[in-house]
Image (cartoon, rainbow, N blue to C red; front, side, top):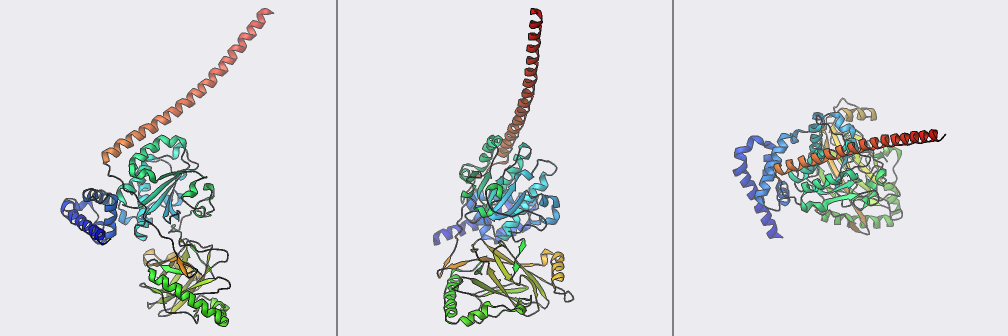
Length: 516
């Protein structure tokens, strides 16, 4: 393992050195300086390029060159909601929501909401780049699963140039960023076209194409993240605004248990969690009065500014030190009789101003919080209790988002003022911190291991892609012409049939008249 690590480090170093020597002097004006800087600092990014090109440095450099030029052409680093047309977000053809069975984020393409229009094509392609970059920066390049939902689609919705662009984003511009492509209910008329799509992906990627219908799509995605028309139970309805931000679009309800872990919490900390949970439960079993004092929350404590200080709370297990708030997970406590678990999260305001905060979750139907939308005075601490609704079980895929922003001293801190504050505050002034669930059962932490599941794709020249695209457009045009001819022949056949019947009837009439 140590040798492999050294080999990888050597390849990363060689890639950077050769890029600076062979590409940067002649093409610096074709790259965004922010991408060049990131290439020198982000080892994981360079490693992903190498993985995607089988650790062949020459091929890796070609891919970096091509992707960097594409990133500057599409102004990827500057894409935001404000620079793209609002209607693109409103139609809901592209968005991120939910996870597949392996825990990878789902990138949805609702094909029925897409129509071919050359005038809108560039903006739609930039929307794809916006979503991919948005997710890559937030989750540090974790791979995605793409879902082409082709239910209720017809030939007017099919846009193979746009499909090719999406595929190219993963094969040429975002290295090691794709796990699989799930194609749901592909129309039969597209069978020939998708043979070309397979050619774009290359032989090693063919196994990652998953054609599915309602009966077998749950082999890849569980029902909780599938809409009803795909046989699932997900009640999620896309809407904009606000932007669907990793499903953190619904505030938690007031009133709080699962254990939470920071994104970077170590295994040792989780083991410490387990030991402390056992100790706490023993103490609670011996002293029921102490447990009651923890679980009972009076009405005065339900106000937004309440601080809950359970007697058995221990020192912070993890602390995130942000510019506005320090966020600590202090203790896990619960009842053996009810099986209920709660988590105490402490927010400490480290500024000289009032800090407003709110909590969002990927599973609002499961969890309660006290308080979920409030403010914290300068230099003070505030406790948040998160609890699990009865009948629900926690999942590692459940996540929480704590958002915080400074308020003016003159601003009020009541519910109406907070509501208006969150409407007006710029996103650039909002601090965000994410927490991931970790469920402890039988004194042992149960966890979901996300394995790297990616494939490598050989490089294709622009000429090859142009030839394939031309052929594909020709095939599409021939299909349309054949359908039009079929309709014309069908109409002609009906007319001829009616004419034949009329002639036969007239002949029969003449024959009858002659006999008489």
